[in-house]
Amino acid sequence: MSIAASQNRLKLTTFKLNALLGMAQAISAELKTEEILDRFRVILNDDLGIDRILLFKKEEQAWELLLNSNCPQSTVEQISVERDLLPFQEITFVGAAENPALLELDIIIPVVQNNAPVGYVLIGDTNEYEKGVSATIRHLNFVQTLSIIIFVAIENLRLFHKSLQQEAIRKELELASKMQSMLIPNPESMPKYPNICISSYYNPHFEVGGDYYDVIHLNDDEMGFCIADVSGKGISAALLMSNFQANLRALFSAGIPLPMLVEKLNERVMATAKGEKFITLFVGRYNTVKRHLEYINAGHNPPILFNKHTRQMEYLTAGCVGLGMLDDIPVLNIGSVLISDPTKLICYTDGLVESVKDEKVEYNTRILEDNVVNLEPIDESIRRIASDKGDAQIFDDVSILGFDFL
Image: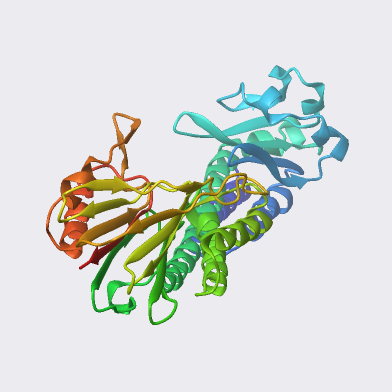
């Protein structure tokens, strides 16, 4: 081998090593995918003389063409990764392919991870070289190594940007959770009445939830209260519930009859959810002087009323269908209870009485009955219920609103 030939080989080897080092460094650099692909194109087209390049990469569930250099569009349109390229797990000359469109190129280079192809690089050479050795053959091993580095770089970029998006979403959810928690009253912010103790518990399954409860001071003699649950979970349920909270607060006054309140709320839910979601609601009005409770249960889990004197337990079921199920509520009943003895009332959402065991959903009110049918204060009963529920597999929001009528 002549000195000139040795120098040329050394120069080419040095170039390839520097190119590989440069691409490796690009993995950790803040380069865009387009910039990395352009580096790849320049090395193959300009430096090595490989004039045709196609680069396919699997994105999520679909294959995408990320790079086309000098390959006719008519040829590209005839190539299907699933049909033409997936059978190849090793470097293959296109002569072994059945699709004649691939004859516009020379070599198929699969990029495989975990025994599955994640990309394909197709290269071709239309130039004539001395001794009949084309650039695709002379630089094949180098192109294969460079292709692997390219795919690692692009995938790292994708994962990096995905992590940034997930972090942004996480922060948005944290903010949404804080905002929603401001709509859910805590025991300290509840209205205070001489002969009533109010307690509550709230635990959304995700950062935001579709549960809501409230206690509203109507006048010196009356208070209103409710507990509600949107069908489904997550952000859509939380948004609908936030809208519902605003409507209920605007409509619930001392002068509005409960049936009218429920009908107006049903109209608002239908207008907002368009029948895609519904809300179950238990809403009550209590007169502190007459000790009279009137309520409507709109498809909600029936609250438990426990008379501490007679030791009798009653489920409050009178009402109607859930809000947002029908344009017009066909039947609407109003419940009425005179609370003459010390009594506990506990309202809850279905996350409390539904659990997943052995991949099956179980409905069981035993957790309520065991902790309500006693003479304990309501806050102690709710504390015990929340503690006992922590041992079960929770898959929904859990909310509890309780009253001690002394």
